[in-house]
Length: 184
Image (cartoon, rainbow, N blue to C red; front, side, top):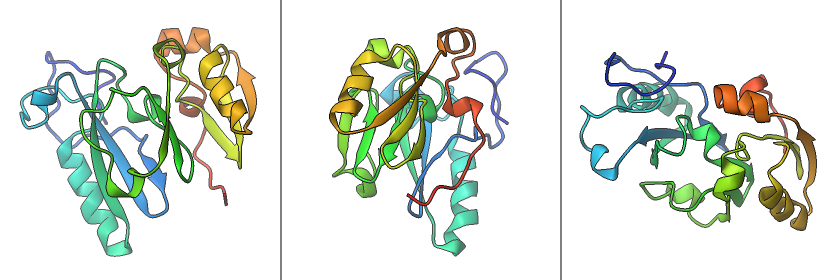
């Protein structure tokens, strides 16, 4: 289990991974947050909620089953978990604040359209939303710019009041739900 937030006071050396990876069609996308791109190759620097050792353990576990495990590094000053930064909405469409990733997206996602989430909407937890079905999404209330971009693409949104929970715990609707399987 990872520390609740990055710290240098109590280093966690063992494999640790928060359970918020992004999964899409046989690919697991793991995000590792670091405060500066120079920290990517310096394993003595703090990681946000997942470290390289845990990603490698996951890769070895899933490889025999035909799954790919990919890693991206993100700016941990935006958030501590990848699910609070990157939203995989549907095949070909994702959302995150441009400039928040330190590394390139894996090949599977390079051609996808990216909705550039504003800092105002990001700070309200816009990306930590729950896809219910094709073009239906549970989203944090108040994320007006993100909401408009989705509605312009034909999405139907269910807004929920999450500002108190987000500001207290940094968790949005996705963090408050169980994982579920959906066909589309």
